[in-house]
Image (cartoon, rainbow, N blue to C red; front, side):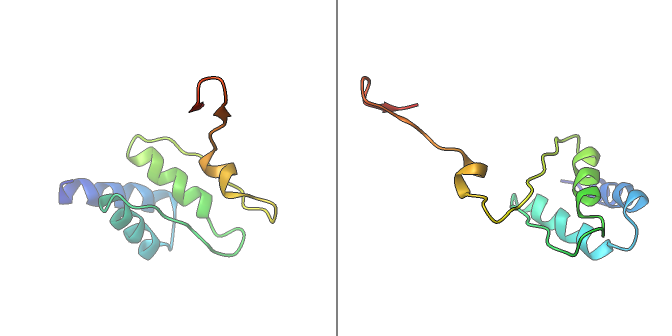
Length: 90
């Protein structure tokens, strides 16, 4: 990704999300590194807005996971069911 493209993405997000320049930069680093990001903070500080703005800026999609005490890993990653007839996982 070109430096000018990164700069434009940062500027675009900064128009919507104010005061989170460090977070914006770290999100772009994760994007460039093909990584994953877990955004943790207190309620009401713009975590969802930050993620939505990044998704819109790069033409991507946005999905949100609400973490609750009963959330299981399979709720996020899904699971395979073994089919005894075929011997395969569906």
